[in-house]
Image (cartoon, rainbow, N blue to C red; front, side):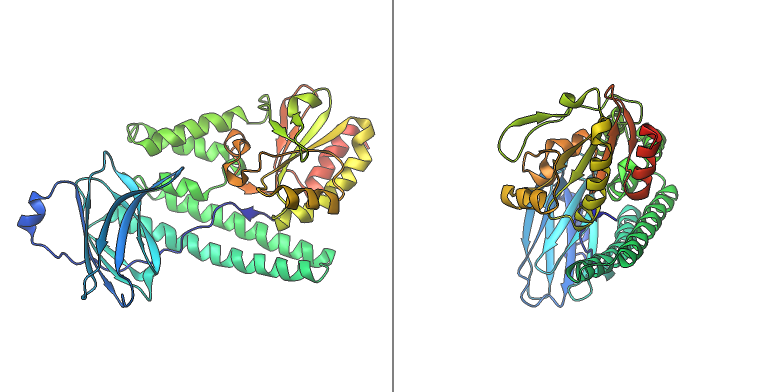
Length: 374
């Protein structure tokens, strides 16, 4: 079971109403988003911001009048994924400087928002509704895990929760892929790629890139996915594992390259990750069994708190080498190894080549038996 990286937006949408006539709209430079927020109550402002990997970039802010109406206007160099933000929720929109969007939002039922005359934004809404349905189920499973963890979880319950999470994750990924397969002449598949686990299916993302890149080669999103696929191929099975250089909990430099000549399990984890902590006892067992045979574990933490990290290392008795830059999801290793969820493992052979990824539990145990012969 995994803790998913992202905290996905709960998107709520409702119908847009023009507050200006067609002739006036024709004279405005840049996009024009006119809308009405029903049940606005204490909501005073709405803003639109560009979504980027580095954070949100402010574009425009509007005051909501007594009738709940607002107008947003701005310039964009290309079709761009933006977030419409107000006090009770967020909506993701695809906007360019030629957009004339009419939105209607009910602040009490945001998921029912509508965007008139914009098939791409309707498609984007449908994608979020699909994703949110799975995220709600995932939250329920995480709550069960937290409950059982506090009550000294039994092996049977642990396996049942893990099986439920793995099944949900598989169904989620399958549903997103099916959604993408029906999309044509749209940038929405590039946003959908954010909901896919790249390490789980690099072949699929490579195919997605090939299918859409020619049509959208000038789009920054197409370029980003194209580059991501190139990075994925650099960490594919058979490729040389990119070196990792980090500080251990006491500030000493440690690196993956130090372990050349050994079979190395790179274990990406964090003290705050429940499923990671659940895997730790199994890794301890494997380490104790195979360490004298040339097996090493390199624990790479996505923590941002040294004390919590060190406490988890000591409590879980993780007696192998550990490293972290304490930047959580901003860690350099995230993009280097295309990590979107943890726990995540990469198995490296004595020559530094990647021989397997995403192994844990019985799969990892069987691989160890295959490699070491016992």
